[in-house]
Length: 253
Ligand SMILES: NC(=O)c1ccc[n+]([C@@H]2O[C@H](COP(=O)([O-])OP(=O)(O)OC[C@H]3O[C@@H](n4cnc5c(N)ncnc54)[C@H](OP(=O)(O)O)[C@@H]3O)[C@@H](O)[C@H]2O)c1
Image (cartoon, rainbow, N blue to C red; front, side, top):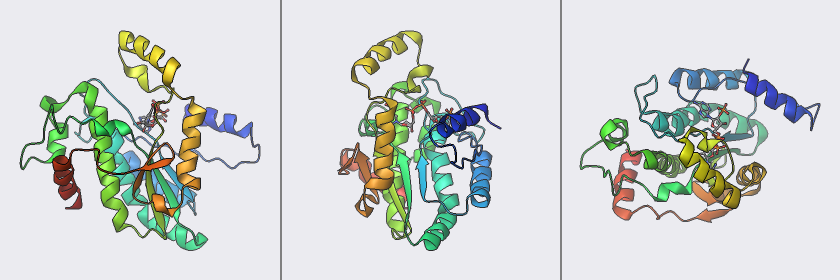
């Protein structure tokens, strides 16, 4: 069993010794692991109340996942879409048992407003979004994270209207700059700069966690299919209109 999970369990049990905590393995870099996790979750957890999709990475080097897709796209976007899709039947059943919707909170980022798909590496007419993301030629290190989060947001906007919100409320939340380990993958000199930026401007992890809880529990059904910046619904439209329309068509198809 995963050592990190066990350590986390022990830490949580210091606050609540009777809490029932199960650890299931999930590697978002690998479709098979995502499918196994979805199966295990259905077996182990008969009723899901809240699902928080938190996993996310930002890499500066082009890498491929076992699926052949570019790794940031795989972990942040493709695997999350597979996970939600695989779990929809179980989430619906959960809602039918409890009589209230399951809250699915997907962690996004406002960084998606600044995307290379519009300017520096624009999508060509007729080019598939995935082919574009998988091409080394269009990998812009400092924008790949943003681009992957744009795909997540577009996917959330496209998927939510197809879900019955009396059963599943799907929301995306951006917690702002939070002092986490995300910058660990950066080169030393960038990490040093980011260390100063984080010390001055980043929120502590606890604040980020509270914003996730707000999105999952406090925000009402009006947050279905919406993007929360901290606690507020941010209107869609920051992404340039032409690109939005193009991507919207892609996702709707
Ligand atoms: N930090 C920020 O300022 C900020 C701002 C906006 C949005 N976000 C988003 O917040 C989320 C959490 O990031 P963070 O800032 O907390 O960064 P982090 O400290 O690096 O945490 C990343 C999380 O993603 C998980 N993860 C990474 N690769 C994975 C994989 N292949 N399979 C399964 N889980 C994987 C990690 O799990 P392990 O610990 O087990 O590796 C960890 O829980 C991300 O979606 C990020 O995009 C962060």
